[in-house]
Length: 325
Ligand code: PEP
Ligand code: MG
Image 1 (cartoon, rainbow, N blue to C red):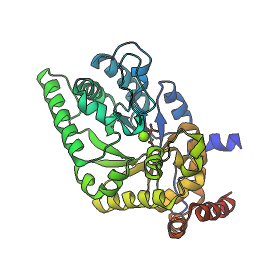
Image 2 (image 1 turned 90 degrees about the horizontal axis):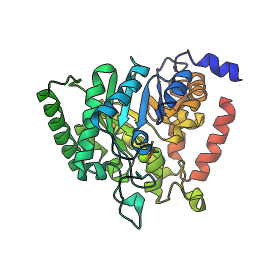
Image 3 (image 1 turned 180 degrees about the horizontal axis):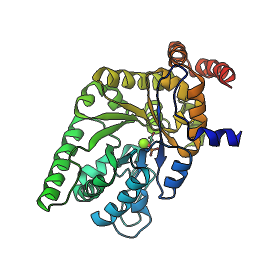
Image 4 (image 1 turned 135 degrees about the vertical axis):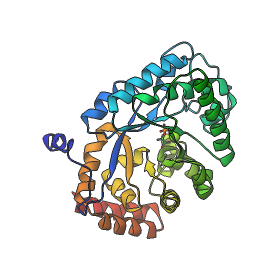
């Protein structure tokens, strides 16, 4: 079985009827680069950029960020790398950056909210990404976006950082693509508005499940509420996929949900063509994609979306799993 999966590394992720799917990696540590390449990742769909900030005692400079981003971009070239800006707060804090005590950290001052308030920190990170951009194919991604005004503010700041680098005659790729994570119900419901301002969407199911079901992703006591098979979650994903398709913009999935091969088939059937996974899951997901046709996947997704409870979805997908095995 292991050998079989190793052989899968170099074959494309294509369905039986010829639909090509991109399988990228979620990475954090520099050592993840090697693991991602070993598993046949076609680039990085989510680089969680917190790690270079965590293992130190002060904020990194733009030159330090440039060096680490450049390494990652070069490691994956010519494949694309999506760098997500700082997603601190919630359960992730920096030892040298005091965070206010909050009753509800996951609904608090975290992620893009920190970046937009502490523009000084945000600008340094954007400059680091821009400086690295000539060394590979990079996209920027913004987490936890809840309204269009945040995207306007991000673009204004990004434009200013570009102008500053241009004044310093530092080269950068002027056409870096900007995308957002769709991981809040607010973003799902306004996806048709947000889509006009971005180059792509990436659905973060880890947080989307948490916020849709009001179920803390780290609390085992309410594990059964944290359920990707809830119709509320499934219809949210479908809606975002439809909005992106109608707008002609790419949409990917970067939450853990997609690491289960049966879920990947359902997501494929909803119109998702790009997946970003923790690297060890890439081979099994690839195997599942190669074993179905896009038409089968669409029928499976349609059936799933017609069911009215997570229990019914779970039993139906148990049958599908047997068929696929
Ligand atoms: C997500 O929320 O689904 C996601 C991919 O990001 P993180 O797990 O880092 O919050
Ligand atoms: Mg998230």
